[in-house]
Amino acid sequence: MEKLETLLGLARRKADIDKASTWSDGAKTYLSELKAEVDEVNEEVAKQRLCFLEDELGDVLWDYLNALVALEEEEGINIANVLARACNKYHERISGIEKGESWQEIKIRQKQALEHEQANFEQKKHG
Image 1: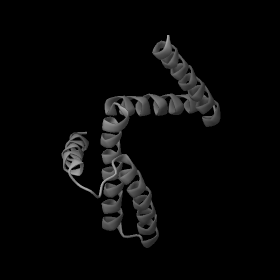
Image 2 (image 1 turned 90 degrees about the vertical axis):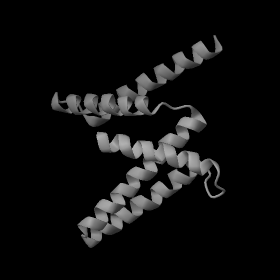
Image 3 (image 1 turned 135 degrees about the vertical axis):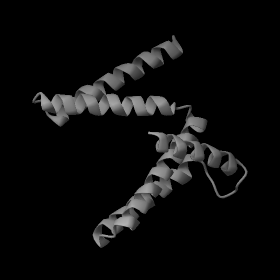
């Protein structure tokens, strides 16, 4: 986790640099780059070149973290919440599968919980 925190810190530093650049369009830039990097990962899997594959996977992680930092600024997301939601979501899914539930059943239940959470948020926002 220490390396992830280091990389996130570098992404935050990069965000400050991006504010003064003309090439960056914030999250849109990094989300677009993320798609391209995933394609490069697939190319390296096919070529079976481990060091290149690891490097490209690092690029995917870099662009993802940069997108998170940009979305934190642009949309007000909380990166800690993103990580907590991911941990909770996949813990629930894996635990459910271990208990005999289907992935799809769990996903439907989780989507309904998100819809309920959003409705409560909207109600508080407008109420």
